[in-house]
Image (spheres, rainbow, N blue to C red):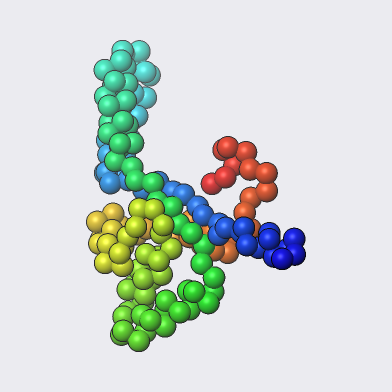
Length: 151
């Protein structure tokens, strides 16, 4: 085995990680509290109760997070998944869900769960997962990443 063969044998696919939130509705409450704090501060009023409420809602929002890890796929793998979808008569949304469910390594999602996730949370958060998948599949990994620069 050559050095290159050894190196290839140890190669791993790029993975990316994103957070999605079960309770994105709480962001509206945080927005409202922020606006109330701005008004209260301008009036010279005490904002302690508003800050406490903001902290409570922010903690609830954070607790609703789910870390999703995706692994990059090759074009051949993606095409094979799309061909399977086509042979089953699935529409574009079902085909996309098939591809994405195959890419998510943690926690595992089924194709149907991806479709339900889109209905439950809307397109934005599923698109967030898709963006991570696209990056893992088609972008070169960042070089010498700093903790806050890998996004």
